[in-house]
Image (cartoon, rainbow, N blue to C red; front, side, top):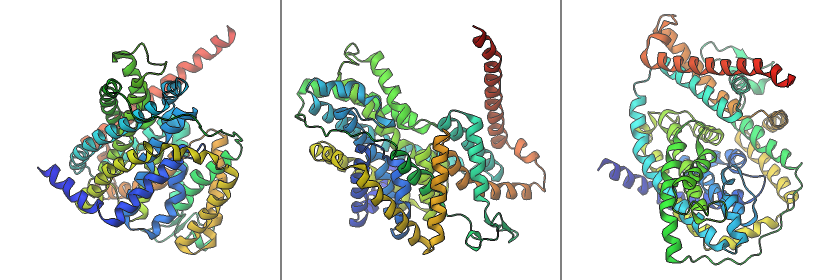
Length: 499
């Protein structure tokens, strides 16, 4: 009964005219950036972070969330019709585009839209059920436990985003160092400001996120000169009853897989789509057709993709640890609005939490309308050349950054981080661990100092407490395994070279 009461409370906030408008805007923008090559939720959310300064907290979070899960819908459309995938729609290119070549574009798009709706609905139930339970468990955490948990977050995000723990931890450390710029709260001493007055209050979170993700992505895309021809094929969206009966079981299987993988650190839509596709190839009644234009190959992938996008909010809102780059930006949005995700969020801000959960289902309805009947309209966005888009985007970036503090220095800082982010891309270094370190670094320092104050300056408390000790042991085991794999690779390298 509590669950239904909480969801009713959430719909009461989500169904206000203002929040409905922001949800619709997020879904439309998300669909658009999912369609356009070179854009995506990561770059778009970073570009729109400055705008959240003038929007209500609930509306801003609802809009940014809508952009994230809305982009998963748009990804499938471009992958199915023109074989233009994003990271979360790679698998959709296999059977989806094959169905287009077989003249079944409408069936493929209908399958993706309905399966995404099913996946999103299942994931919302999982989110509303598990997040409060994890939040209650997190109340058992003390300062030392939070320090260990943040270190686990550094290791997980560093590994799953870069594939290299050393590179990821180095980027996290850079982020932590950037987070220390400014005036120390305890001593009042300025740190790493280089006698620049505008750095006394630290580097702005928007400048780091917008520069390393948004502007850097724009600069990288200017190197790509691919011209895509708009899809002009015939689209008939109404499936037959036997075809519809093939969609539902695959969508339900994909929903379960996506909901589970979305919770895991480093899971998310990219991993979920491959997991769902592998299950369909193994257990589907029509597995012999998969890879040659099977409905199941589209349905399972689309449902898992959308489900994982929803449940990836669980670690962020329940314990305050983002599991991927987009969730790190969502954490930045929470922090900008003065809300600290974690176990206290549901108790302190129940309207935000349950309103956001309810808005996801409302967004699901919006996205079905946008991506099934209106799909031909959305395909026309491919006609917009990138040479027209990027100057407009950069202009609004500068205006948004300046509007936060009305300070031109913020624009120069953002440009500097844009250059730094582009350098990271050329060096194949992910900026997500840097942003995570920048956000969690001050929190790590605060909890570290608090833990030492409680223990009288002894470090033994980090090991003797059951939760922090277990988490630190887990980190040590993982790092030992990575060292072992590295050492084994070094030993084998001369043998391979000799062969």
